Image 1 (cartoon, rainbow, N blue to C red):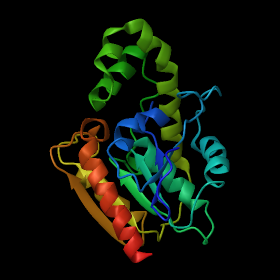
Image 2 (image 1 turned 90 degrees about the horizontal axis):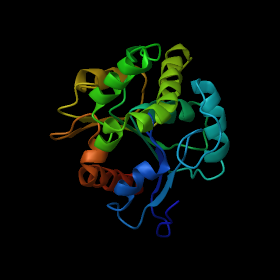
Image 3 (image 1 turned 180 degrees about the vertical axis):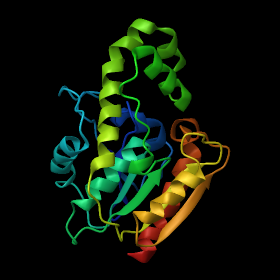
Length: 236
C-alpha cells in the first residue's frame, strides 16, 4: 500500500497472469504522490503463501474479502490482462454504494480467452514467451522457470474458467487501454468489451505498446492513470 494525499484518488491494481503486488512498483514510482495505491498478491504469488487457485470464482471470493475492507466509493480499479477480468467480475459483486471506475488494460473478453492450460510444459512456455512478459533471466534459467510454471498454469486455468461465468453489463465508467502493437489483445478484441459495459466507455491507445506495455512503458500508463484520476475528481 502507498498512502496518498487527502482526498487523492484511490487506485487498486490487479496483476497480470503470473504477476504479483510488486509488479506495480515501477508504475507506483511514476505516479503522482496524490494517489493512494493498493496492489494485491493472488494466492501463490509474491509473498502470499496460499496455494495457487485454479478457478476465477474461488479467486474472487478471496479477493473480495480484502478489497471490500479498503474500497472507497470513488476508487479506480485497474487490471492488466488477466487482472482486468478479475477487476470486472469483482465489480459485479459490489453494491450500488460503490461506483468504481474500471480501467481494463490489454484484456480479452471471457469468450476470447484461448485455452492453453492443457499444453505440455514446453508449449506453455512458448505461449508465455509470446506475451513478451517473461524476464530474460527467467527464460535462460530453465530450473527457475520450472519452479514458477505451476503458478502460470494455475493462472491460465483460472483465466479459462472465467469464460463460464455469468455476467451482466456494468454501467460503471470504464477506460479501455490497448497497445497499438499488441498482437495478443488488439483493438478489435478490446472493442468487444462494449457488450459487457453499458456506461460511458473511453478507448485509450498506448502508442507503440506491445501486450506488456505496463512493464515496458510505465510512464505512459502513469500519465493515463493520472488523467483518469483528475477526471474522476471532476466528475465526482
